[in-house]
Image (cartoon, rainbow, N blue to C red):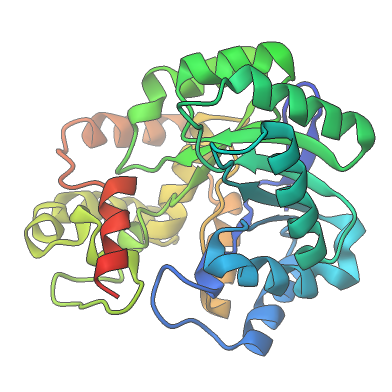
Length: 323
């Protein structure tokens, strides 16, 4: 597995594809049991993955405990990322330190490599958060920091105080809104970009149909691209992916990941992978290579396909009333 560097300052070297660990604990319906999940995370490492992503908010901290236990044998050899939500009724520095200490305890480590603000608070100046993160870096409690779903303005203001290592936001062939401003800003400033949901919550794997149903806390219950109408309307996209997958003896998921790796050299996707075959498939996307002429053809044809449906935080919040 080749590596990429996140950030020009406070930089981190990671595998070209990382592992988003949220799905082991919640978000996509029943997952593997604890021991199987631990083994899957360790298997990803054995196959070359050195970048693992979690958050305090995933299953109320249980995901951090799981990940911490899984990576314990090779903690010093990997890059560990977690995230926090900053309460707006507290002193910012006190709150960030308390949340970080709680995460460190759950993760079983004394530092975090990459610490994200899970969502940018609209009522807390980004400069104040950046200042706190800078002090944590100086103290060695974190090695780098980032924001999630930040705007270009927010990331520029924060970066001016304490250089950002990475921005983590939704990005895939189905969701390209950050291409117009945030991703170019990251390129300009030397900030890594980490796509979450790089396979469109699994849609781009081509393994789901409009007949599938979802239960419990599965976010696909409320993501509009998984409605029957939108699933059917988005079939031309899957057809294009399948065509190029057959050309390269790859899979639609691999083409989807290889596409973004080809477009941006400072980008590292973190797909969720809850089965051994998915781990092999997704990590294998780093080896998929197409000639520049074929990528150009792919882009031209992709531009003519309309994408139906999306994923929003507001829609996902509706799950609370459905469980």
